[in-house]
Length: 263
Image (cartoon, rainbow, N blue to C red; front, side):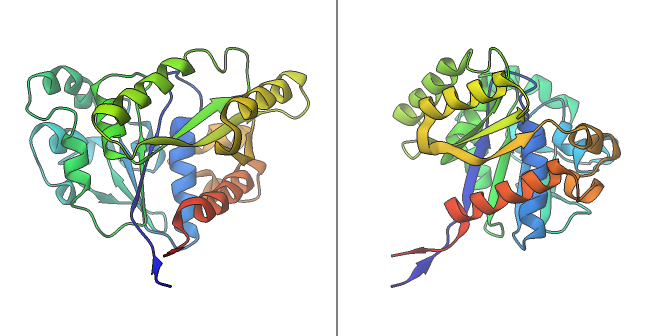
């Protein structure tokens, strides 16, 4: 048998804001990097929170993902190294907010990110931090990816709007990217002391079955503090429960997608 390890591109998506997309991208990337993986975070959110969360000063960037999407710049010209072991960044700046409008008039508007990322060979995993919408930026992410990971917060209204996301994934799979599927669900903001968190987790597991990761991401103040210092939580406070949760999640991601497959 031959062991085959392929580049994985994962879109972290949920059109609902505040569910932990950026937190999961930054901290999962850092945890995998700490385990020896080479990970690229592609920040596709105009707010640029993954960029600042990894300690990159947006004002000092000469190129960003905007240039890759709109100006056909090579992604190699825009990728920045970070302070964190194994973690690289395709950063975002505020100008990305105009990309939704500018993409409308461009040829191959849905596939521009996919074409750019297909040129990259030096990473084990690419995590795309999607904006909280289902516009052209998110569609570009879904066309580029083979797997969608959906963070769902363990709160009231958690499942609201998810049918729209599932429908968008199905449309993209049918017309633009036949490989695409929802391959992972992360339960975030979990509080084991409340019945609500337990009930939401149970409902999500019923709906998405084996796609749901065993690791749940707890409510943790350190997870909220770390971005303001431009640090992933595993470096900001490696002993906190949030850091330990993302290290455990990284192990699941490795087992699910990154360990060599035997053919």
